[in-house]
Amino acid sequence: MSLWFVFALMTVAAVFAVLWPLGRRYQSPAGGTEALVYRDQLAEIDRDLAGGLIGAAEADAARVEISRRLLAASTPPPSLAQPDGSLRRAVAIAALVGLPLAALALYLPLGSPQLGDFPLAARSQAPDAKQPLENLVAQVEAHLEKNPSDGRGWTVLAPVLARLGRYDDAVRAWRNAITYAGDGSDRRADLGEALMAAAGGVVTGEAKAEFERALAINADEAKASYFLGLAAEQDGRTAEAASIWKAILAKAPSDAPWRPLVQAALSRVDGAAAPALSDDTMAAAKGMKEADQSAMIRGMVDRLAARLKQNGDDVDGWLRLVRAYLVMGEREKATSARADARQAVGNDAERLRQLNEGLKNLGLDG
Image 1 (cartoon, rainbow, N blue to C red):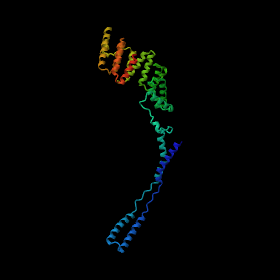
Image 2 (spheres, one colour):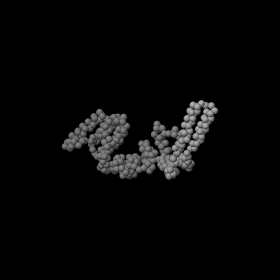
Image 3 (cartoon, rainbow, N blue to C red):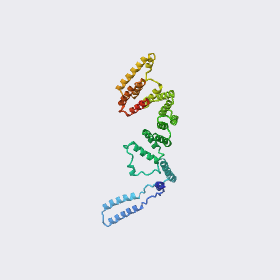
Image 4 (cartoon, helix red, strand yellow):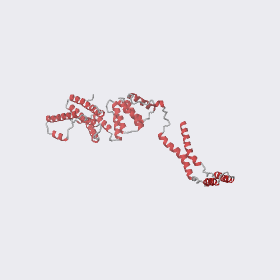
């Protein structure tokens, strides 16, 4: 309450600063006093001249200077215009009503009168980015216990909890983020992913509902579509899963970081022998015997492996090579290719993440 009293005093002071000049009376200065002094000086010069105290030349010079000053003092200054009465009333009303309303309009959306103080000692204990992640999470959780409606805090905390494997806590955090920071397709998809992770990788009915809500908000939400395809695969509806994933790839940009993940999942249910063959190669293979087809595929796999030894930055190529070895039943070569791939992209964190995600979907993680 005392804070609002201080604000009221500040507003009154601001209004008074505007109204005080408007209430002053403008008066013309009385300029007769100075002229009387100069006239007395002229009379004194005549007396000094008559008494022989000054010469005639000095008397004339003094008369000229004093006459000049007398003329300047006798000229009235320009009068100050009195403000128009209607204008004064309009400014007064604007000050009395407009200033408080403008202050409230600015303060109510921006100010926080209920926010506690933040003394200097507390500021010096701000979180250090070099602390262990668990300590930082604990500090954020302590803050959210005191400020449970901080939607931005829940949004920041939720993915960190999921990364730490605290999936149940991540589910709660995403729910709070949706409640206090607003609904959205990305938050719904992340909530569904946390529910799925908490269930050991199974797309439960609750998780599936969240993915469907995400798509209802944004039909292009790729994460939700991917996991709905995974739900179809887990239910044994592989054709539906393949259809969903093909639709994702058809709309996805060529440089989307999650393309290898979706492509690996598609190859898992689509029954395609890797590596993918071009249309011309597929047409040429239709008339071949089975042994010739196997030899052609073997040649393509060998050429792909040779190319990757020269340029190992192609994550999609490594995943196709591993998948090809798995399809051909050569698990040892697939394991060796996995090691070579990780060594080739190990200096690029993003490519390594994409590779590990693809390997996980191929069942060759570790």
